[in-house]
Length: 156
Image (cartoon, rainbow, N blue to C red; front, side, top):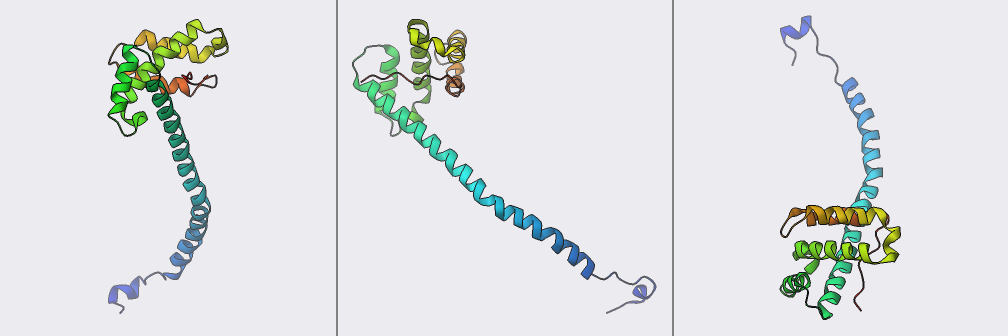
């Protein structure tokens, strides 16, 4: 119902704002709907590659603990893995510590590792920075992400 103030200054019609809002909302919604499957695929694809990496690490830990060796690093890792349901998740610290020390030994002793120069430099930097219980071992996945990562050794 109009008031006296509306006689001097009438209200603007709302249909113009409704048209502008609809004209903007339809393309924005269309872009969102078009990109949503890609976003979901990227998230689920990242999760599957993470699961595959964890499965490989679990297999490596199981293979490592089945082979006879008396190194204290291996014993610490196997003790943790024996009590864990998913060793790659529950024993990250001991696994990274073992992996850094093992890969550093491979880089200095194995001539086949000469092609992995950036990986070996990364691992050697971690060895120089790390001590027992240090957070430097947690940076090992950054070394794994390098292009010349040779993979973990097999113990079969």
